[in-house]
Image (tube, rainbow, N blue to C red; front, side):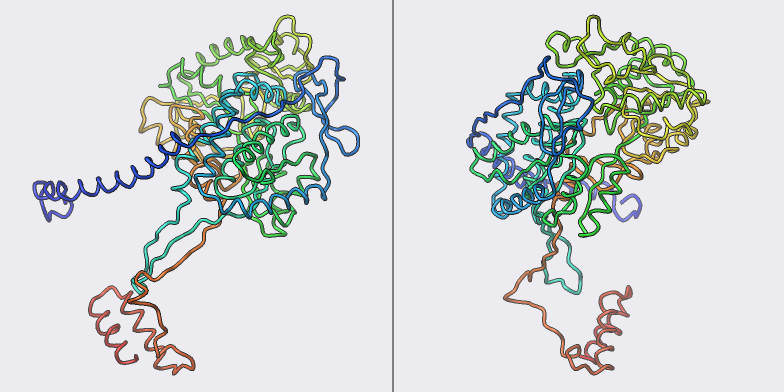
Length: 609
């Protein structure tokens, strides 16, 4: 109104007072109906208790192994801290994979007919089990991935529970048919979009969070009406049967077919069989860009849609206005959570020159105090900050990247030498396999061209880059010098300035004055661009991504008005009459002038019709 000058605030206020209350009341009524339905469901529809056998405990008498490769047809499962064998699982053949995929497809035909209430009950049963068995799940995850127990609680449990809560709360609304605007020419039509389950989702999950990565797509897949077949990493197969059995038992006690979910174990061949299987309708892959390209190629032969989450090289920007306490605590958690084995962990820290020296001095002292050892041992787990690496060769690869950086001028402030691992293990720790650990490390004097600034490290390395002259422009240039673009975080007391920096960072996600909180807001989509992949999971985008959209059109008032082909357009056509009629239709609906609509449109339709 201020722009047009057509009326004053005094004239607008009474109008708003008249219109807004009933609109707000209608919105609240609509929301309340849905919320009341959920409240009644959660209060009065109970969920059963689930009991699942636990996997074998680590045994100090078991042999020490070098990795998952065992005898033909088997995958060796081992404790990542001690390298002692835990069990063996099958390296599944193509025929075995095909059989499981077929079972899932058959079970989905009935599951797709279930109500959202029935699906919520299964997820509520799952969440009840998770809450009652948190410590056990954390311990199994720690054994299988090497992470500290606290890291398991933060990364495995909280994210899974929030995913279930979000999907149960909003999922039905997100998947409900969506009304769309119709066109002027078809004003009597009611267009909608329906979200139809693909059928069977094929998931290839990584090893860094064995519980959450398995549950993540099962939760959204089941709720959206799909079956889910998960190929777990050969490095996290020990926990897979136990975790999948939890879901199967939840389905069983709720009266549904346990074949709806399946787990595949094995090496690359079993993953390739999953991608190629004709009963898999969509593939979701989390892993490296190199393998992601192979997955996309394999899916292309059957024209399957693919979601690729290919890791990151996430930057954390600390401007000169950043609180030093915040800077220290957030960079520590971002770099060393799960020994740095996080897709959206902080791999590059860009520190403005104004606080650079103080930050490097203080962070180095803090990192030197981090404690490492067996993360799940009853004697040591309460004293551990940083666990082991999950892959047997990971520590050597991290050392190669550190050595390359040092040869090109980087400076090691602490850590950085796998040969001195003894100094970093807690006193008296002798049960661990030192080759499975890498010391928490701080590197400075880094250049964007170094491998360690371009490749995903996936280890406990903090790479600190100085931003000269406290320049936002230079910072953005340095941040965007990498092809990975998953997440980012910017710390600055001036929010407008922080927003301006964030908007210029190429990434799929960004947080202001915080780190990683977007993953605990499961209404948000998760994913990146560039080398970090494409498409999303989580949020409305991720849940709808488990379905294909189907456009549906109905007559709004079928007893009064339906479509019939005008005589001028019926076969066989009279060209001059038909073309003239078509031109008149275009002018009637799309000419911007009223005279054109009347003369060229209405009059033309009368003449040619």
